[in-house]
Image 1 (cartoon, rainbow, N blue to C red):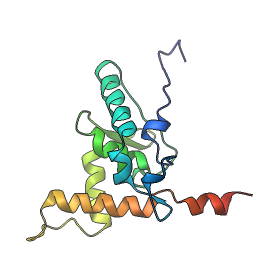
Image 2: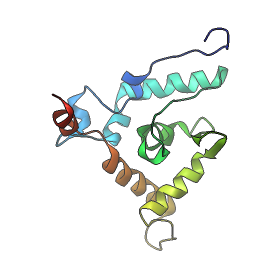
Image 3: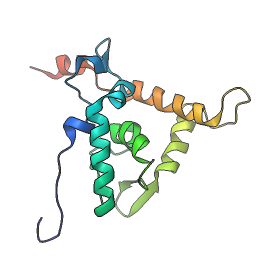
Image 4: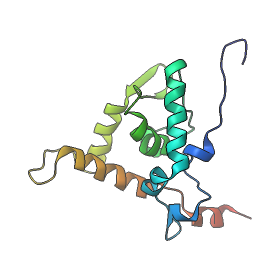
Length: 146
């Protein structure tokens, strides 16, 4: 990878969704809001921000749909403040994070203007709902462990 100029930096401890901190869980399910409030997460975001200043950065994922991945629902949500975030769901196709947010709002029926709920709150609600749907649960380990 050195020849191609590619470097790998593991930030799973900082930006990962399967946390070791018990305070990141509510009833056995990880809370993305609690992760985002952790000092180690903000340090990871800062490292990502600094990396974006000098390098072209890719955060890799195995999920086919970006809306199924914590990197979209947790990391990109915060990284969009300092980086142009794009998702590459398949070969030769890139979509902006803004387009992913439109899909996210549509997924939860929050695409229409609401007289009583500002658009930014609708989006926050969509993020919260998606996080609850895809977040890691300690039950998943119990079910998949031998």
